[in-house]
Length: 403
Image (cartoon, rainbow, N blue to C red):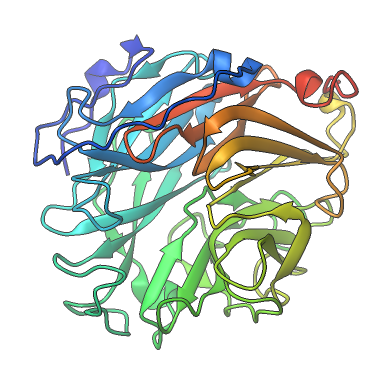
């Protein structure tokens, strides 16, 4: 792992070049043309990660974002040799201490060497102040689709699951620890975390649990969703059984805690209708009901993000329950980034607005210290990840000011 960038944390820039030593790079694909239309979110957007911006990477993809101590934002992504999903990826990080207006120079916090790291999934433990990041390792020469993967929890052709920890708000990180044996179904070939942050449960019998969304498959395409969780602040990790599927296969998962302590996984469709697929756990993520279509949320086969913005008991936010979703709104694939707002934990979606005109792929959501909504998203095919801010007032045309 490369040396952390403690001395650079006070130096913030609107663009985010990477500073660790070069490994390899490849041809950069041209960015998709942006639409002429603008929104408050698109007007406020800044680059967090960009390929070949004083860095070795030919591609930057798969963003995830969380809030740590003192309202610090931590943005994670894959730094790739090329556009390919398994392209000798490292895990990279950038920080913001001003609600995403500016971002630090970024660093590699997990160097894959000749292997490949995929799907950064962070979770913040508010009890201890630790941040955990779980990701998968593909052995060199093995990819999701090249036919070399075998089932199991160890071996030269097996996907494995790893975790690193920061105890100082993202300044330094531990060495990766293999947690595959307790977090991957032994008979399956494929697993993927998120790519999306986990959450710490705040209510119910499992209060304090750290839980992250996953999918698994015995063979490519036969996906099911499940959860990985810790009840001892990251010392050990366990998993739920995979959920059955009621409407086709879901993968690429997001997660949120609901008002009654239930846990929702919201996943992209792999097949079975062009809708988001949801699975609910009534017992804090220990077991999930069968996944089914949410016919009010379209899905074009792209990852989406979920955020429990506020609970009904949160008087500082007007005493309203709010669940927010982001993803491409179309028409066309990976276009017109839309944000949806629900007041009943996703049973209905009261508001929807296009926030990012033009190209919009994978995304993440975070609540900012002033009550605004932070949106991190892929602004091109694989060369740029940006961050934007929007307000509840704008999203709801003045109907909800968040107070």
